[in-house]
Length: 393
Length: 119
Image (cartoon, rainbow over all chains, first blue to last red; front, side, top):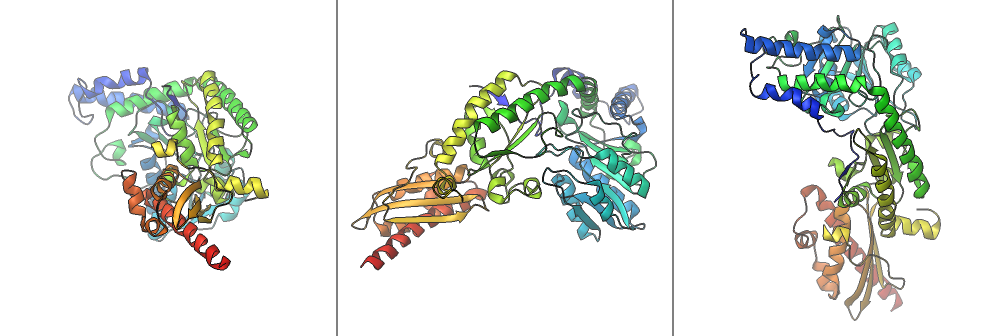
């Protein structure tokens, strides 16, 4: 059976050349990077090389790169670290209502600790307006955290403009760039970014390793307490293989970014055009052009997302949805609700995220497979029934 | 899984004796059940479902379980019976099987009300 992977925003496979750089660190190069003998020192060097590669990809300095266990840890650290280190200055944080749960749930935690959080709403395309952020700023605001690009609907935020505003107001600015790295060129200096989170497995690197970029001079508490690793800010024996793999992966991802983007955008735009053309009562979520190059998110009225995913899976297609059942709760995606979709339409959404190995013929297969699935589910939907008979639900 | 991919008894009965609809689109599950009843026995049953895979499978299984049963027997079918017939459902999906039980009850109630008013 076919196996077509259209869920690159969830994770990606490790590139063979990335894996190759990692393998020696599981066996012969097993030394602890803090050890004094050469088996350790060489690993310290390998970590520093990876740090340089990450710094180069972001236009940062190597000493501003801190390795973590992934994007979630980087997000938790940025928020909690700034909150705890700067609470004498203020206890107010600004974010949006479409952030990843790694941000939103950390904000909820901080609210319990006595911090206040403003969740600035986005417009119906999923874009946050700089004026709205400016209005939310208070004298006690210590941090603005806005995601670079949304994981569900792919919309790209005006990060540079927000960076200018934060700098002007003297407020720290963090961006969760987990989905953006390898898809959008990022320059932390030019964009006035003080902190940035990223995760290795979203750009053909390994899972279990990420980065928090912290601009030199930012006042932040350590994430993990213990040894002197990561300049005393993030203790724990380094995941050398993971760090080396992330370094290689980010180097490859940023070096081919334009070519990669052009290819993905071509597939994406054709996917959007054809799906909307072939399937009635469907709509695109997010902006048409200002979105991640591989992201398609479409709602199909009258049906439920998980059923679509299960049927696509039977045909060998891996995709994702904003449906309640996939997330383990009964609520549909907070992002789709935030852009104003009614509950029943938010339930019927499909996210396709294209990547490196996808071809035009993968898309052809999807375009053959998807319409009959939607038709079959609509045929058994009482909502569609009512709509056809009464012209409304 | 088979009951999801090839659900039995999907559709509607135009001259149904009892129709029950439960759930709402906000939670992402709606189940509509149509019953044909003769001499207190369910002679035909069809359903339509808007919902996740488990909702479709439980609807399908529930229609198989009540076909040919008396109304009393049908009312005894619980969400557990349906889930067991499907060889178990994950805990998060148990609410989907509640829907099947409620849809049967609603359809039988509807039938009883119609019958009383026609007497």
